[in-house]
Image (cartoon, rainbow, N blue to C red; front, side, top):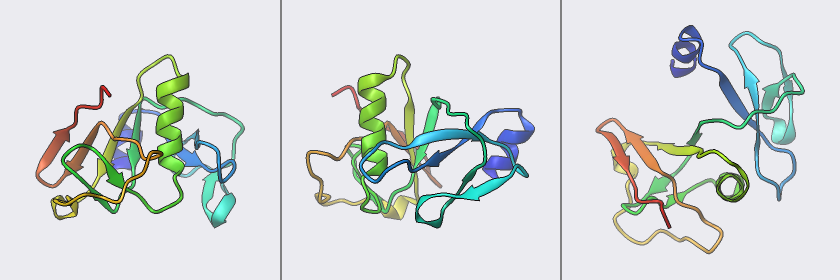
Length: 134
């Protein structure tokens, strides 16, 4: 798996953690085999007090369009997190959606003012980079 590959290459892996339903996600370092505890929504999270700002965030999605907008799972966690990193973090945090090419939506996604673009999407056909300067 990707996580095992990154671990073998000694690349730090961070897992997202919900702090509060209206807050951005935080990211905790983790390695395969390390202890996990149950967090919000019954999701397992690393059992440590460290937080890191990742270089890259893999954003879950149901669909994406040709402009880099994504349809997530309805909680807004990744949109708040992307906005937070763009406004409050000194370094650039790169965002990539992981999808199948058939998840590309050719119409207009139901987006609102709180929805944020991702920088790229990776499908079985390769990477697609979006203009996210705006």
